[in-house]
Image: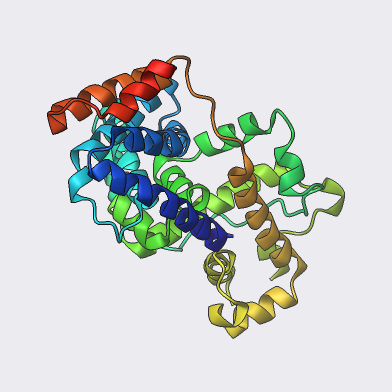
Length: 217
Length: 93
């Protein structure tokens, strides 16, 4: 699944790399086209992080301003999509930190190296009554998903957004958030388990519910 | 295998590692444990669901505000007027 998203990024990259080459030669129309293509992805990412459209607009603008500033430095062997997602995350994090007030608790909770100890084990285990594709077609689902994601602490939410929604690798997620790869893996697992629990309570079939794992073993 | 070890292995498995790469013990555990299989499936469905959504709608006028500010930044950075193709494109809008 993650592999498929990575392939999509590569395909998207080859079309956008050509626009980038033209932009580097001073072609503003190509740059504009590049922005049009990348903007939905960038806006979606920063909106998920910041949750406020006004802040997401600022972060999106800052991201593309950075692209202009660093256009000539950009090495074409790198992925433009991955690069822009990293820049967008940093722009969003700056705004988020400002809003959270740089508190010691925020900084230290973000930097803490986490372990697999004391994981919250799955409680409600049941197969879902519909596939993810069928559920995604229901109008009210997005709000449900947003609410579940927003209920996570920032340190788990950010890792899930970058790794599982945007498809960055563990290494890229770690570089973007300045965390170790092992820390990313632990946080990702915590985020996945927390979201699984919430969404299974919503979409799981109670008639087919099972005993929790730690009771079974 | 303890539950926490199982769940850590689950992470790698969901990320696409083949069962035998994760570890033989995990493969055995998954094979013989229905709740474990359902948890793995639930996690995969959760990720699929978050990826399946349509892009978010942009705020009204955002596109125009963005392009206006980027155009100004471009001129400031490169110190040149925009190329003729762009100007033509803009006039036709």
